Image (cartoon, rainbow, N blue to C red; front, top):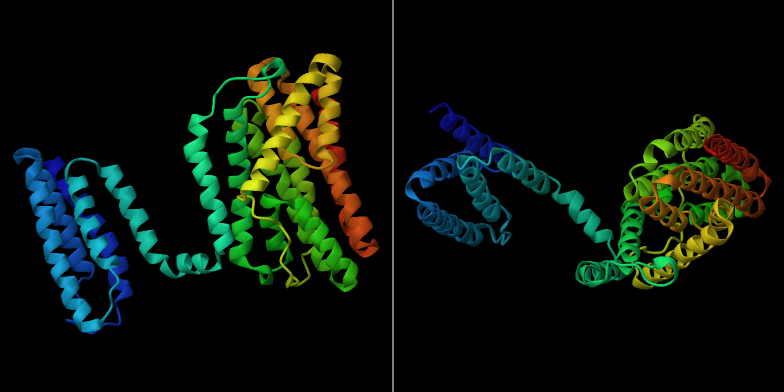
Amino acid sequence: MYNSILLLGVALAVGLLIGIERGWQQREAEEGTRISGLRTYGLIGLLGGVIGLLSGQLGELLLGIVFLGMAGVMTAAYLINVRRTHDIGITSLIAGLLTFALGALAGLGYVAEAGAAAVVTTLLLGFKPLLHGWLRRLQREELRAGLKLLLISIVLLPALPDRGYGPWQALNPYEIWWMVVLIAAISFIGYFAMQIAGPSKGAILTGLFAGLASSTALTLHFARLARRTPDLAPALAPGILIACGTMYPRMLLVGSFISPQLFRLLLPAVALMTLIIYGAALWQGRDRREAAVEEPAPIGNPLELMAALRFGVLLAAIMLLAEALKATLGEVGVLLLAAASGVADVDAITLSLARMSTHDAGMLQLVAAGIIIASAVNSSVKAALAFSVGGVPLGRRVVLPLVLAATTGLLAVWLLL
């Protein structure tokens, strides 16, 4: 008895939750002109709960019959509304049917699933303007590139052989492409966030998103802007620092995702390096208004198929070279490769070394040291880039924090080894 009342209560709550959002959307409509609102959706959820409970006793056929009846009633109401308002949107129709289904799900005892689905449904309904705004900013080329990568990832990835090939069995097609997809997904989050926010949101926000996509491209872009307009240097410098500082948590995320044991070894150094860069960025930007960056950063879509393939080739080459240097030069060879790779890219060497540590737990400290060395070298390169391209006004604000963070990382390596 008590359990049944609880299930019905959840079913009612599911309906009321969705009904609040639907009712709020139509709150300006005159009384009697709304087809459904808070009470209607609450009752639909409760009806679903009652039918869910009864179907447990009388069989699932009852649930199917009542659902078809609900679909008929709501479709008839929808057609009447279309004739009256000429609004052909079916969102409310689908929301009503989903409310009934979630109420029935709660009545059958799947309380957590029904509650979670109701929250997601309400969010999707309530964020209509935001979601449509995102969609308007998505270009056809970006959509097609994303679909291509999803196709070859979801369809091709399971078909790739999950075994090593070549010298030292270093090349595993499945692992290589899986890591390519991982980096592309993380980079696309930053890339798409930049597309949504737009360049007018300011240098710091642009730098934050660019740190997920490509901090090097952002550094070069801002340095060129500072060279053309030196007065912008004080506003652009925090954006560069934020982008460069975001690289460290990204590196920690990528490395730990491949080899979770790396997290505790990388965390102290990464935290210190990030705090140094972010602290300097916040200090420099504390009394200044953010500069609007009218020119978008030239960061390519990371879901482009050719960009993904190029990264895959780079990743495979570094994996093979890492095994070769480990076999010939030992630990020194791995660290030299990390330093050399950090000049151009941190992701590939991070993934390669993290993968090595999954096969040999005794290499954890060496791998952590190599990843930190790569990030320190990369930060130093970006400091040199900002100074040489952006000039003294930008360089004197950016170089010291980046070099200090790199030095801190190298000291952490010394402690590790």
